[in-house]
Image 1 (cartoon, rainbow, N blue to C red):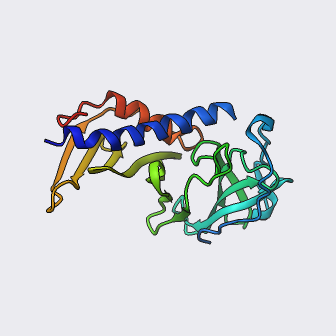
Image 2 (image 1 turned 135 degrees about the vertical axis):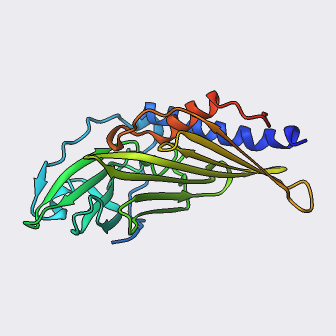
Image 3 (image 1 turned 180 degrees about the vertical axis):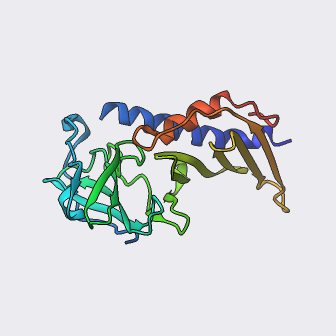
Length: 249
């Protein structure tokens, strides 16, 4: 019976999702920036008005507003018109606790770029209020199918998170989320398939030498989740709390 061994990992995963959600309410390939000034303190951190990005520009650099730098970036064909689109994750130069906007740029035949959407919740803040990195590894990329992949992993409760977005019928939507957490006695993998309206949970019992797996898939009705309003943490928390798996906790 996995019931008792799953309690620690369930607690870690849910605790981290709740903490991340509360923190938000208060406050070419992957390129990592380690020059962000880490001097802001949580009690001094002020919630600022979100800047407005231009609707279009001739160069990608024109979308990098004053006070921001590129934290991650990727190029690829998102809207399947055989032109190289761009995705940028930006961060404020002088505020480690700031939210990180993710901006989608579609390239036109003229070579100009169009702002196809900005999300302030597609990725989490880079640091906790204590100025520790939430994830040790972060990457954004666009695969050959035109799918935007945002992948993050870290030790402890951070675990592993991958989100996927696709441009479908003129709208850029969240289509899939995956998580993996390792706890005392068990590992837990979750897949939230929004297009197929299912959630799959896989539990690995590490208390046994052969580490048996138990996988369960249940139906779950997701509404359409647009990129610019998608908040993976809150979506997963709500879905997991409503899902009824036989294994239970």
